[in-house]
Amino acid sequence: MESPDFDLVVAGAGGGLVAALRAAELGSNVLVVDADEHFQRGNNTSMCTAMIPAAGTRWQHAAGVVDSPEQFLGDIDRKTGGTADRRVAAALARAGAPLVTWLADSQALDLELVTDFRYPGHTTDRCHTIAGRHGSRLLRHLLDRANAHPRIEVIAPMSLREVHTTEGHISGVEIATPDGRSERVTAPAVLLATNGFGADRALVRQWIPEIADAHYHGGGHSRGDALRIGRGLGADTGFLDAYQGHAALSSRSQTLIGWATVVHGGIIVNRDGRRFAPESTGYSEFAAILAAQPGGTGWIVIDEHIEQLCSAFDDFRAVADSGSLVRADSAGELAEKLAVPADALADELAAAHRSAAGREADRQGRTDERHALTSPYIGIAITPALFHTQGGLVVDDHARVLAGGSPIPGLYASGGAAIGISGHGASGYLAGNGLIAALGLAYLAAEHVTSPVPA
Image (cartoon, rainbow, N blue to C red):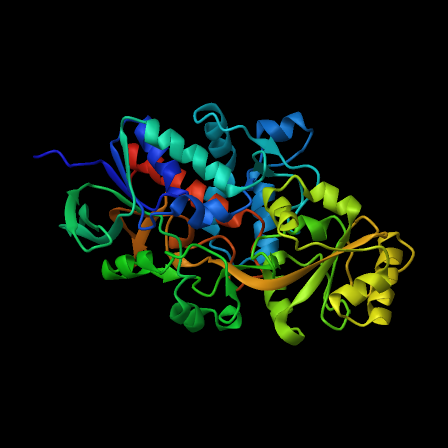
């Protein structure tokens, strides 16, 4: 039998690079294609905050943090109300520690444990990140490693058009350049890592109408390619109503401000100068809440102490450099600059300070421990956004795509191309769910491609 051109084809040079690196390390020849010429700054991995949730790691042990995959899975269950795919959630909860260890030891990624704040829903410190806390740095590192590996070939722009089968098994793919020139490549395994369908407005309106009119802040090539290809092969789909929203996107710079502003003690007010929901709610579900406010916009209000804490994020510094931070020495001056009623904003800031200091119950039911805001204040205009979809092809605990509940031999999916672990809607999203699904499922796929286990 003639040898295939490659052992694995990966469509998507984001989290899919993890699969390429792991499979190549284990002896496979890998082709990576990406439809976006500018994927290094335009895919969802490059736009994230590089937070990888992992339980039971050496970084946690060194920091005295007690955690386990079971505890992580429990947090997923609570956040999703038990609606997440249990098999995939358990697999990713287990895979987190081996993944980050491999990234550090084999791929020389300098990771650190985030202990200065904790996102809503995580019961312990388990998010691992890099300096700058930005996905572009993570992606650049992975791409540099892939480009240097003799068993990996990366081509962009090049899109995956079709996946071919022979007697039910993956046998190759058709890839094409933007001008339509196509080529057939033989391979026994394909990983669909093309993200979800957030850039296709019609699909978003069909499956997630509540966020369809919000700004889309994700990769422009996330158009549902994996759904099209998978369905053509009879694949199952699920959780198509699931998504990650975000309520902390700068209206001025269209850059992520970051929910750390809120976790540290910031409050969110609408154009009437009033708070309208507990900010301890997750940033994903808060997007739809913000969208329902008058004008569909609002402001995050912080102070200089929180500004200093959030300067660890590249994104926050970019927002500051864009001139998006409105500074004021008093509540009245801030209200004037934000064009909101002064009495209302002053009242909300005073009440929020009292509740943060433990002197009265919070008006919106917020119960987290947080810094009490003090003048001078900083206001940042925000707009709700859709970041990426969280539903897709149904996969198992090896990232194999299923059709009628059984694996399609040789076909895998990861990240937004696959079902995630956020249940339905936006409220089940835990910080890092998208990245652990992108990197973790890619890692599991590579492991299975190189050392397959029985179905």
